Length: 203
Image: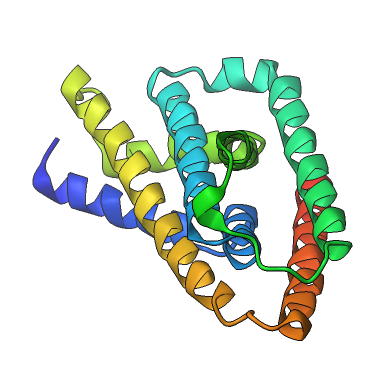
């Protein structure tokens, strides 16, 4: 892989990751409502899910992924349903500040699953990877090491991008200290989660 192709692919993946969408909204709403840590873990889940999709594209398994599209649909609806559940729960939550430093591991794992299901639940993403790769990379001369580098780029770009959104949302959550502001935040974050879940289910 040439340096020019590598940099071009990095730019393309970064633009795709930074584009507003369900993954970004999921991370931001997690950050505003639960703080940086859980939002960042959700972003790591997004990166893991996208890494699976790009690996399938590299292995030429796009047709296989389309054959078993029902698996991706199940993941999509599971993630959407969980996001709507969290939104309703947040809407009804008491106006108290949660401590992210004491977040149970179970909640962190659920945040990871949520991010991964959002990424894996978008089967069109694998078509994006499969279509953008031949335009930028020479697949005929790619080595195993090049493939690992491509997957590493996707993971790194997603973690950095989602981490940036998580940091912004986590910092914004510090503004919601009073019960009145916390109640407004609960309503806003809950509505955003419900709306994002509905958007994912309708796509």
